[in-house]
Amino acid sequence: MDNGKNEMVVDKAQSNIGFRLMIIVFTLRDFFRPRMRILKEVGIKPGFCVLDYGCGTGSYTAATSELVGKLGKVYSLDIHPLAVQRIKKIASKKGLVNVETIQSDCMTGLPNSSVDVVLLYDTFHTLSAPQEILKELHRVLKPEGLLSFNDHHMKGIAILSSVTGTGLFLLSKKKEKTYSFTKRSRPDMHNQCDN
Image 1 (cartoon, helix red, strand yellow):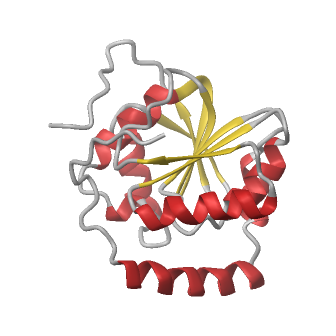
Image 2 (cartoon, rainbow, N blue to C red):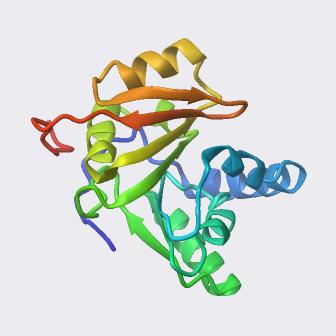
């Protein structure tokens, strides 16, 4: 799924060299600290639909695919073409038929209220229009959906004010590695990633 609309919502696109270096660093990190430990905090169940927003190198893709099982779906979204290519390669190599990629900087192209969990990890600090992203994530989350958030570049108070300050989400739980936010019902919400 390619949404084509690429108004720079991210401060600056990462260079290809930078992305390739990130793959090396994150591969080492994931070997010593598997991402499944973080995902277990989220409570992802078989059959869930999960959106990995800003999927980057795909650190969470295979583990999330395993958690949702054959009846579930994982959408891995990123603005960077190399990220999308990498996710496709991982999915093909590991036979992850429940993984689909989306190349976009904001709009997911997913139906309203169709996602059980959104993973928003180590991406928020790079966004130049974070409120627009949060509106889109609010739109695609089911009423009982969960936004799982972690950004090691931000302090807890900044995370809370950034996410709850929009009026779109309420803090549900602070866990060891993640913050869990629930969707606040707002029938007057409009979905636009452009200003």
